[in-house]
Each structure stands twice: as C-alpha cells, then as structure tokens.
Image 1 (cartoon, rainbow, N blue to C red):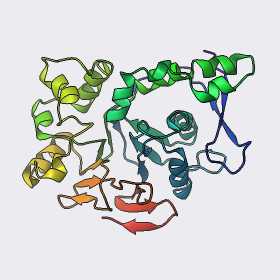
Image 2 (image 1 turned 180 degrees about the horizontal axis):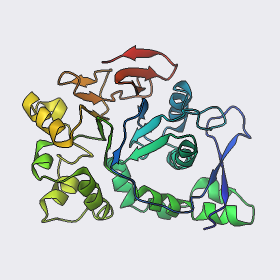
Image 3 (image 1 turned 135 degrees about the horizontal axis):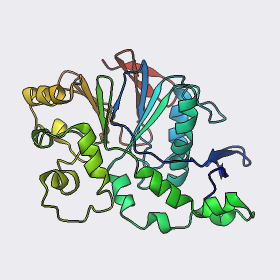
Image 4 (image 1 turned 90 degrees about the vertical axis):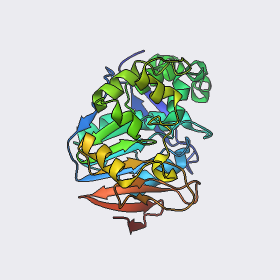
Length: 303
C-alpha cells in the first residue's frame, strides 16, 4: 500500500451526494500506550454499532469536528469505547473516520483513544478483512488510491490490532465492559493486560490454561463483557480496591441499557448508557465534571 495514498470515501446519508472525506494512510502503525496524562476535556462515545450518522452528529454537537471533518477540539481527548462493529451499515466508514481523526487530533495537541470492545475482537477473528468493501468495488479509477482501497480492510485490521482494551487517562480508567475483582487479583498492570491481550486478539476461540487469558477471552468477567457493577456482583469496598489498584477515581464503561441511568457506587462507576438511536448520548468530562451530551447539543449534569 502506498503510504501517501489518499482515500476518498463518500459520507453516508449526506444531503450532498458529492460529499466525501479523504484519508491519508499512516506511514507507520504503533501499539498504543496504556497510560496518558490528564486532560481538561474528554468526550466519551460509542460508535453505536457502526451507525456513521449518529457518530457524526455527536462529534458535531460536541464541537470535536467541523462539517469538513477537521479536528476542532484542541487538546481535548476523544475516547471511543468500541461499538464500531455489529449491525450498522457503515462500519468501515466509522473505522476510517476514527483512523483519520487520530492524526488530525495529534496535530492540534489532542488525541483519539479507540478502545476495543467485544465486537471488535470478534471481527479480528472473522473473515471481515477479506470481504471487499462496497466503496472499493465502485471506484473504477486506476492508481494507488484504488489499490489502497482494494486492500483497505487489511490496513484497518492491522490498525485495530494496535489498540488497547483498557486505558488510563489522568484519574480515569476507560474500558468497554469493566474490571472485575477476579482480574485485579491476578496482579497484572494495565500495560501487561493490554500487551498480553494484543498478542492473542486473533485466538479467542482457543482454550487457554493461563488464568489471565481465560478471563480475557473465555469469561463473562472479561473487560469486554463484564456487567458485575450493574448486577450486584461487586460491593463498595471491592470497587474501592479496584480503583486503588489502578490509582484512579472513576471507571467509565459502555453498556447498552434502557434510559439514562449511568451512575453507580456514588459516581465511582460511570456508564455510557442508551440502548437505541433515540436515547443515545455521549459523556463529556470537563475539569472533573461529568455531563450527558445529546445529539442535539443539550447537556445535563451527571456528577
């Protein structure tokens, strides 16, 4: 693939049939860090099962990007808690948008954190990357851009494999499902959990003898799936031990739930809820304050 190829991708559901966004292929793919310094502004979203239109609406409402899909969030952080894969029509477009925003954010002092969920891991193990994307077969122009599009899913597959399942930003821990007490008792650092998980992203059907790998890939206590915070499996003292173990004040998760219930254990656990397009919202953290941000730009205090 040409490192300098630019990929024109049509924006789904755009009123302007000629509206596209371009992506420049990265020169190098590096594994993500597990630890990041605090940030004044953090927007937390899920890609809502590959619903490109909702993802764009939320990013516009939060003033993370403008209508040209350029980064305008300054040194803020965008955290995506999985949700790119599933039933959505525009999974690939969501992935390319996140891929593209990473470099744009860095140029402005910001950062994009794409944290993997269960569907991302499942698709790393499936035949998704060998399926020809519609936009590639429809583009009949010769040259490196066409060749890059043809191989585009392989580039995305390689890129997704650089991502983490847990990250710490300042005093906050971000994970799709949650951190169980069983995982904490194994004594691994976030760095080691991410490193070991990454080495096995494509082996989730395996039967592991290693306790960590069993929890990560063969257990309901996996960070991708864990629902113990909401089912009464953990108590306040256990939550405090988990927070102390990773030196954080809050854990932020993403589970689909009806309504907007999002605060657990006196605000120590914050869940990005919303189970449908209609009640979907993002989480905005500004200088330690938590807000719900709706697609129409409305904001509500949480903590």
